Amino acid sequence: MTVNQSNQEEFLSNIATRLGRERRTGVKPPIWNNKPYLHLYEGKTNEELIEQFIDNLQLLNTNVDRITRQELDITLSRVLKDFEVKSAISWDDPFLHELGLTSLLSKNSVENSIWDNSLNEEDRKQLSAKVDLGITCADLGLAETGTVVLMNGGGRGRMVSLLPPFYLCIMPESRIVPRLTQAMELIHSKVPNGLPSCINFITGPSRTADIEMDLALGVHGPGKVHVILLRE
Picture (cartoon, rainbow, N blue to C red):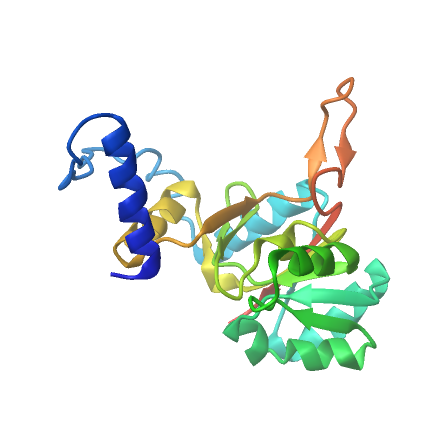
């Protein structure tokens, strides 16, 4: 049993004690005869799902580039110039390392910090809040809504996609699935090995219309979002 699992067991046992009953174990989730909306987009090709994903992102004021890995250098340079980026923070993730992200950012005179769990929480927060751009990859993309799904934990800090004013997501196009139904199937498949500390569903820039129904971008998170899809 891991430390996290041990803490979870202690937490749940404490709740049972406070409720004045024995801890319930062996509860199995129901087996549903029908899965909601699994049939939607049935028969769509991967190419059609990718096009749907891009169309929905563009409706959300999000720019998208669909490129090969060889084109990443020039595309990233353009994005950094458009956002006028001087500093960035990125996930400590094998996929981004494999792309040579730090080297590409240095080439464009961008000072990059990699998420460091050894720093205390306040230092990580301050660092993420002061840079221009946060960069992550994504575990999934949802074609139906243009949503990117991020599983946080370890070197994949939540603040990277939340605090900087600009957010860039780089992901392989093979990670695009039809909708939330398929995303939840993947998430459930990870349950036996432990879920991440947080799962973020990001659908375009931060937006709110709380005040007199006037739409404002960037109030509670990045005001501009860019997605780079890598062909495979």
